[in-house]
Amino acid sequence: MARTLDTSPSVEPKAPGARPARRRFRQTAGRQHHAGPLTYVLLIVATVISLFPLYWNVVAASHTGDRVVQAPAPLLPGSRLLDNLSFAWDQVDMGEALVNTTIVASLVAASTVLFSTLAGFAFAKLPFKGRGMLLSLVVATMTIPPQLSVIPLYQIITDLGWFDQLQSVVLPSLVAAFGVFFMRQFLVEALPVELVEAARMDGAHSLRIIWHVVFPVARPAMAVLGMLVFVQAWNDFFWPFIALTPDGSPTLQVALAGLGAGNHTVDHAIVLTGALISTVPLLLVFAFLGKHIVGGITAGAVKS
Image (cartoon, rainbow, N blue to C red; front, top):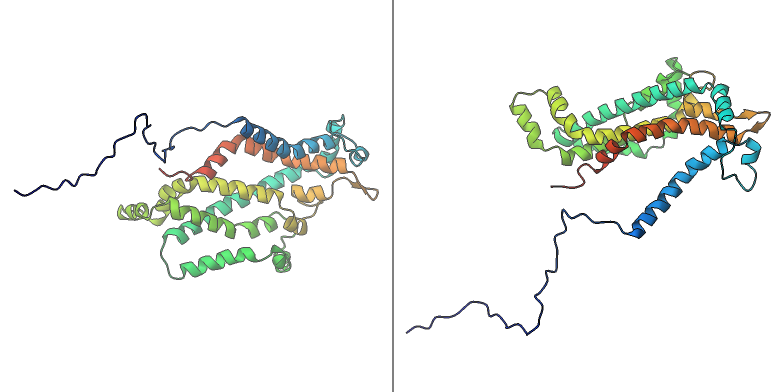
C-alpha cells in the first residue's frame, strides 16, 4: 500500500506560559493621534516668536520716534498710537495708496490665476509638439533676475505714456512662470486624463471642459496661488517704486518710502505706523480666508 506523505507544516508546541506573537506592523490609518504636552509647548513658543514682530510694530507705532530708537527698546504700548495713525494717514494720502494697492494686487492675482490655470492645463493634459521644450523655457525664465528687465520695461512704459499710471504695474505681471509651473504640477496628478476624454466624447468643447471640468478640480490650487500672488503684489516694491511716484498714483510700498521724512531725519515711529496700516488688510484677508487657504494647501495630500 502506498504511503501518503504529510506535507502540512509542522507546528512546534508552545512553551507553557508563552505569550502569543504580536504583529510587527500595526495599521494606524484612521486613528487620531493626540498631541503631548511638549507639542503644545513648542506650538506656543513658535506662535509667540511669530507674533512678536507684529506686536512690537504696534508698540513702536504707539511711541515717539525718539523713544523707538532709544535703548532699551520699548516693550509696552504707549499713548501716541491714534496720533501717529492720523499723521501717517494724512502725510502721504494713505487712503489713495490703499485703493491703488488693492486694485493692482486684485488684478494681478486674478489674471495670474486665470492664465496660469489655462497654461498649466495645456502643459499637463493637452498633447502638442514641443510641449516639453516650451515648459522648459517657461521654467527657465524664473532664473532671470528681474533687475535685467528694468531698463527695457521702463523704456516701453515711457513710450506708451504709462509712466506713473497703474497699468504700468499691472500689465507686466499678468502671468508668472511660477504660477504656470505650479498649476501644471497640480493638474498632472489631480485631473485624470480619462475625465477630459469623457467630456470630449460627450460633445463638450474646450471652453466647456475648462469651465466644468478643469476649474472645479483646480479650485484648491487656484485659491492657494491667488493668495500667494496677491501677497506678493501687495508687498512688491522694486518695480512700483520705479514706475510710480509718491505724488502721483502710488501703491502702499511707494507711499511708505516717502513716509516720516523731514528735516533730514526719519521718524521711525511714523514709518512703522505706515507699515502697520499696510499689514492690517492682509491680516483681515487671512482671518476670513485662512480655512480655505489651508484646505487648498492640504488638498490632495492624503490619497484614499
